Image (cartoon, rainbow, N blue to C red; front, top):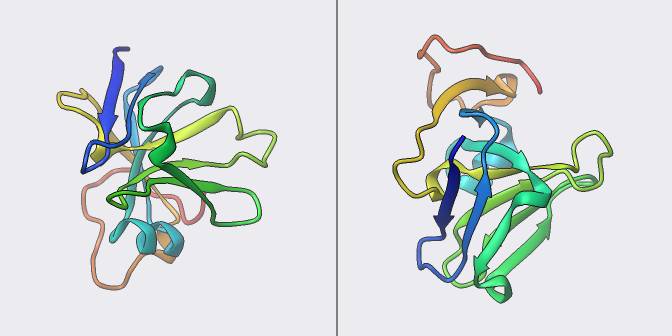
Length: 134
């Protein structure tokens, strides 16, 4: 898999990571919808392989639940990362916003999760697998 590169809207935070798969997950939970403005589309990569190449000081982490944190640019507010850093079986992986990646990323949407919590203003009709929760 290729190296992924990306940045926030204003360019203050830039990063790179090695992808070990090419599938993107769409999370429809209420936290992700509030944070991203719709559903959160992301690719999971090894947390140890994520390198912030520019703007470490502009990257802000918010503890959004008892087990996860969300990383965003403190300059422009772009949602960049989701990390379940307090769950042993998840902390080795980090989710990177698919929308923040430089093109071509050569990824594809593969799965919808937390569809039981999705917004009532849209339908999911792409034929991809859906999970009620995670």
